[in-house]
Amino acid sequence: MELGDFIQNFADQFDDTDASTFTAETNFKQLEEWSSLMALSIISMIDEEYNVRMTGNDIRGTSTIGELFNIVKGRI
Image 1 (cartoon, one colour):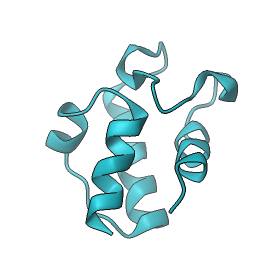
Image 2 (cartoon, rainbow, N blue to C red):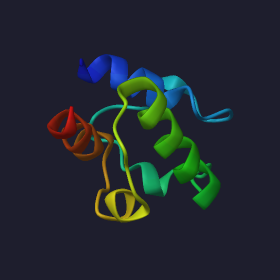
Image 3 (tube, rainbow, N blue to C red):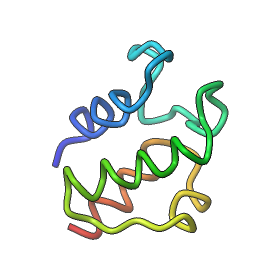
Image 4 (cartoon, one colour):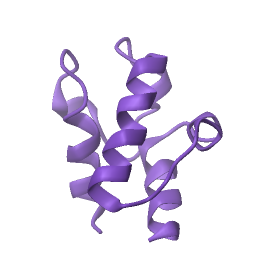
C-alpha cells in the first residue's frame, strides 16, 4: 500500500475539489466538499480498496489524509 495511491483513491471520492489539493497534510475536514456523506464514501472506499473496516470514530479521530492512511496501513 502506497501513500500516493491512497491519496489518489481519496481524491477520487470528491467531485468538485481539484485533485492537486490533496496531500498527506491535507486536513480533509476543512474541505468545502466534506460532509457526513463524504465520510461514508471514504469509509466505503477504504473497505473496497483495502479490505479494512473503518468506523465513524476512526474518521472523527483523524484530521489529515496521512493520519487516515496510517490507520489503514496499520490494519492491513
